[in-house]
Picture 1 (spheres, rainbow, N blue to C red):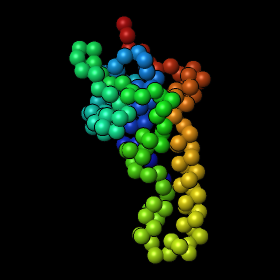
Picture 2 (picture 1 turned 60 degrees about the vertical axis):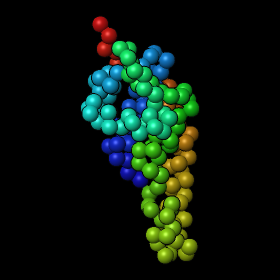
Picture 3 (picture 1 turned 120 degrees about the vertical axis):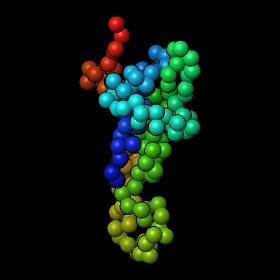
Picture 4 (picture 1 turned 135 degrees about the horizontal axis):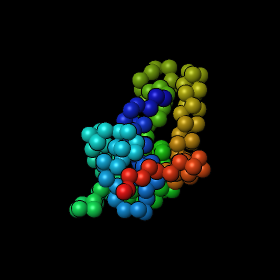
Length: 146
């Protein structure tokens, strides 16, 4: 499984919102500066995150984006699956019809085990987990206040 830019950036956007959870809406400009992701790309990803119920839009002069749920309730699996599709190393794991050998293939079993391991790690890891890891390293979100 190779995570694309969309998946990597989407996770970083969500992490930024999680790090600032409870501090009010976050502006795209702040995410852009803090994460080094273009505002245009952020704007492309936000509708999907919002429609999936992961992000909420707050309108008005103090508007922006915020998590729709607690960071401890949003798994990395949920984010990656939304942005990338199921985290599988080969298509036959989720689509046995693409290979006529699936029933007799020992490599299919191997890839299924790999997929289960990846899914296990991603489902056990929440945005809250990543926030705690970042804070343990002494890395607080960047502040652009004056």
